[in-house]
Image 1: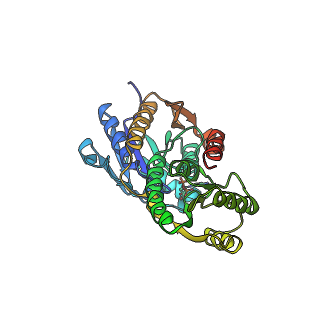
Image 2 (image 1 turned 30 degrees about the vertical axis):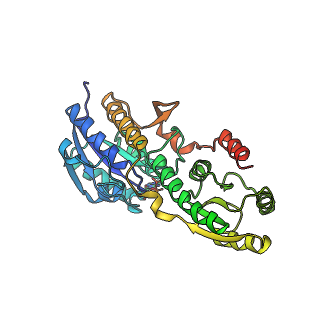
Image 3 (image 1 turned 45 degrees about the horizontal axis):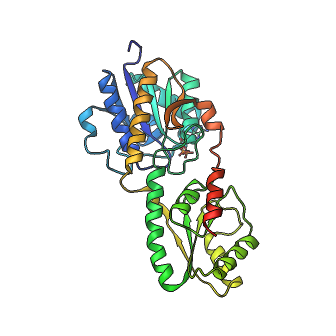
Length: 328
Ligand code: ADP
């Protein structure tokens, strides 16, 4: 591939997600395959502003495909939100002779990258890495599938104790703005109710539904609640409210928290990370820039970054219907 790009920088930014290491590995090796140098940038944009760089070769990324987290570390960097911070980042890129940048992260990180690209004419590529699956231009983000498996595994265990004690469990899962984890894991774990920010069920309907569920012979129940659920109560207040209004239920609350971000990536996430990363490097080498690589209808596809950061990743209405039907 004839092109001007001889050195590509890669960083992970924003929230970490399982599968980011598989992406780093694939980027480093695709660069090597095409005879291009790859530079790892540590701690996201913070490392870019500080010049915390290290050249990576194919053997530097041995044994990381199976590891959660990110070997490059990640960070949130306020300095990068300022023109001075981005100037420092650009100076470091220039000094290291890095011609293009691959950003593995969420839409905040892509927005930061677009500023840099606009101000200093640096070609960038985005790879969606977040457990929330809330990025337009891809059916799956890297880390989502692993997080779903983690949640389903945890809820299976909670169900064992819930059914032994005939309890109602409210289980809070991650997803401040999007209910993708709650909806998918809720269906997979057989939850009786799924509360997501996109669908405000209302307290009355929740109580009615739980009453109905009890009447129909269910002795224990699991309600999956997305962090960003908009009933106006946090998960503990929700539990108290239901216990006050439905004394027939013994309520418990479990917040899964950061365990949802960790763990070995699933095979799906490893394969996804590998596919998107090969495409990201090769797209840059073809002379294209400022795209996000994603999966659309099971095919690797490019979406302009401007569209990826503006668009929404709506909740799948078919999944909502499936959930309504099978929780009867
Ligand atoms: P995510 O990429 O997971 O959405 P954040 O929204 O926290 O995570 O963004 C990660 C980093 O990207 C921020 O700490 C900041 O350095 C950079 N960033 C986010 N938004 C902007 C912006 N509007 N301008 C410049 N940089 C930004």
